[in-house]
Length: 301
Image (cartoon, rainbow, N blue to C red; front, side, top):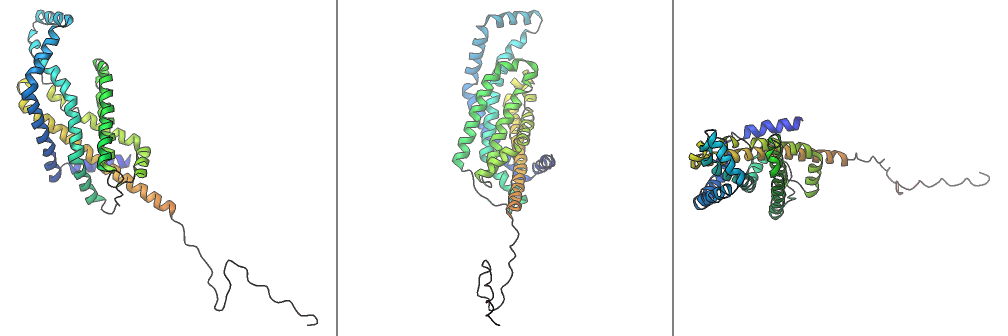
């Protein structure tokens, strides 16, 4: 618990470092360019397709009639944009995580290592190719979990539990591997995963809940639809900062855990020096062999 809290406060302090703030704008620029580009080409077709899908549903038609009778029929105009946004949000989250993991995490880990763990040996137990396959495999599993769990999101308590849990698991898998790739050997990485799985998963889940902060932006309803070109970059930057903070938290925790693991291994393998009696001058026998017996006494002596 001390290691968990210590790494938390250190990560929060590092977020104020000018280098961290500057790095957070690189994924932002990439994501904003990607989001605006896709929105320019596909926003209207996506809205038209969603409206057609909603109008073809009988129960949605009855819902429109009921809403108009209640005097809130204007919700019909914003429902399709909000549904499209809610569908796109998980894609933005996953892409933000992967971009931060590829562009920011190595630089943030190097910053933490330089300032706190300069003496920690780099064993390079994870290559870039392995890291990419690990991240893609974890993302695929998280995407499958999201698709399977979508019907459960309609249950009010579960929508507050399932998405952060899935984001947290994905963050824990990707960030822990990337943090340890440069410094830990494969055996050390496996051991840290085994020993600290609960704490690392807890960090991932907590940062997953922090990643839900942009939902406040989505929840602004009609205002968000009108101000989307301005609010989308804000939301993406929040995602970027949250994942940057999680990278720093994982870096401080995992590297400190690695340092402790190596200290334990060093103390366990340390053996005291063997004490050997020195030989006297003229001794020509090995210390492992017994000294020759004295000659037997002659008869009559």
